[in-house]
Amino acid sequence: MKTDIRRVVSDLSTSTVYLRIDTWQRFHNGYFIVRFDSSGDSGYDRVLEIYHGRGRFTCLLETAPHGGTDPGEVVGDRRARRPNERGVTCRLPRTWFPRIHRMVRFYAISAGTRVDRAPDRWLYHWL
Image (tube, rainbow, N blue to C red; front, side):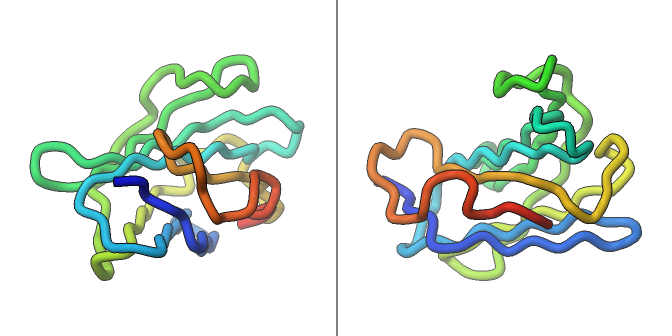
């Protein structure tokens, strides 16, 4: 089943980076990728993978070497939460992001989906 992103909600507090992805339909398996430019230099420095495995969703944060889109070393992981059958949330420590500031550019995609009704990257500009 194709998982179609409806919206992305984000927030940045003094200690936490919060991200929620809602879809148009219910899903039990899914795979989302979120790329972050937390340092503001127009290169992505973190890649968040949200995936289903071993009966639960996991939020895995990795470095993005040389500002690219390919994942690098694992920064850390946390268990994802399911607010309902159409959403998944991640709460990550702010310390996992280098030089993070209020203006964090990012975009989210549903991996493995050819057609997604969510607008293309650049819609979700700031945390």
